[in-house]
Length: 138
Image (cartoon, rainbow, N blue to C red; front, side):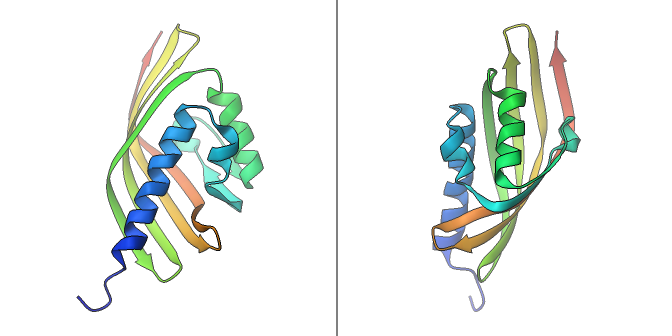
């Protein structure tokens, strides 16, 4: 099909997002931070968080929020659009977050992301988290 994106790019972006979930859930903050551009922009207001500009600020905020929690992030059904060295995607999300064994969240929503191709491969440049529903356990 003429104009269709290279499947290798599509696969690289899906692998990037798989690493995102694994490194986040294993609390590999250094590795997780390397998935973003230095000027990464993150908006997690849809989940009760804030807006963060810069990779370091976003990693620090996420670490402060869930650094000691047990987490499981699962994404699926990607809608990926690739245009040269830029791409966008929407990922369906379900996550489970358990803080200190007494507070927990099961959430459902979507990641809306923008990617750029760098010398080191695809990186996440922008992310917005939207929520459809959140269940809280006391």
